[in-house]
Image 1 (cartoon, one colour):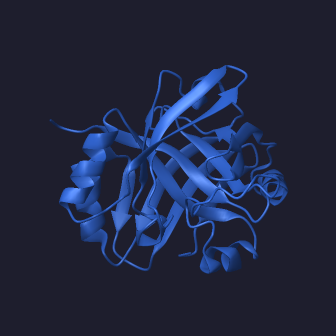
Image 2: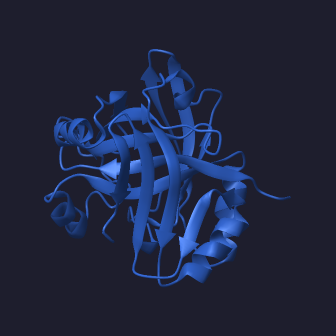
Length: 226
């Protein structure tokens, strides 16, 4: 069976959620919308819709470790517990990763494993929202690593509700996402294996680059290879 995946959301990490909110105002000219807590991971977030016809359900997630949450008893996702990430975020919030949605989570994880890419098992998570309970399954490695400097997407399979469906249009749009990596051929094979389109790949130093249309004009977010 052919898999079909698409970009779901960009992940901007911050040392604290308030720093992420301040960055959003200063960089994108917008107040991020409400998010929620992730008890399973000890993190919390704020969200913004960035959908376009090319990326119909895309949104931007600003995420940080929640200092008020109990220790999750496991390594957090997106490398948030790594020393390298802590050093990078001490310089300010930045784009670190992206997540791809698929209608067949187990199939996508298996397809990547067939290429020797162990994205991690699917774990079940949920959080309440004003529009109802969000439920999803997401691939998370036990060591929390993103892999390929964040250029190999985490895969997610949503339940009946998708968060972007109830997010207001804030005047921001994702124009494109480009990934650069010395192992571009392996990434291209991975994207093909899960049927991911809409993400451009080139060979070069590790980086993710997202171009956004905002009320303040075009803005480019770059991971800086973290």
